[in-house]
Length: 351
Image (cartoon, rainbow, N blue to C red; front, side):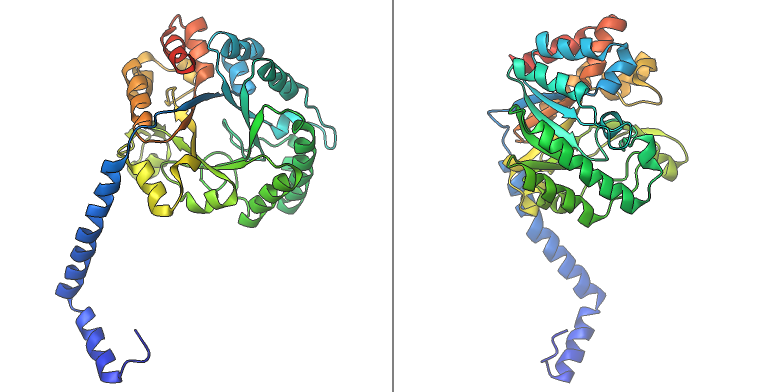
């Protein structure tokens, strides 16, 4: 309440605003004022005319599914001819022993990508793609939070100094959905993630992307950390979060129209060309390992029809860059389940 109003006016205004009818009128006024604005934005959303497609790749996931991750990786490059990749620097792989760094696995991936002019987004940090999300070496799990932070900054410095020699790395990703509650991870301090971003920026001039949940994230604080906002785009999930509410795991389809993504970006003041979908759902999400799911369970979240439906949905958002989540599974379906549909259907995106 304005302090410069006369006391009797202040008292009268308080009385008026406490009236239920007045409150309802104000709410309706706000709703009818904002709805045309939202629909104007929604109707203005147009599909991007120049979409960049890429794929995620995790050697750990590919090894789990097939037993030969290098074979899967080369098939992505030479058969699918993927020209944009998101690769991962796993702390658990690079520094298995404290202070001893092994870059050989990721060096091989980057070198093979460079031979074929493939551009790379390289994910760095403690929380990076694929379960359990936080990939710490065993020795680091025993450290206090403060010691972990110190060691992680030392790791980032060594990694960036080493990998910046690869000119096919176009963007550094620092952490993956650090503030979204998914995976076996604790929330990091906000200022620590900022320290990570600042360190990478100090060491190299390439742009930085930080990822948030496309469906449940706040976006703006994450976007302000870097140069680009990375988001996920999942249409159908199976997740135990809902078990907390309903007493069981369930399949769930997010009730979000395609225009909800550009609408959210515009409301928050985030340019749509600064938004990259780093995880576009293109594999099933079910009640077990993806290679153990029945066809019925797989089809609940990623059938052949749902694959094309998801691609169409993504294209209509107006966002200009998408990285498929599930290419390792496509390969498994083709080679181990005699189902080449997803592998072959995806080839159209890199022609």
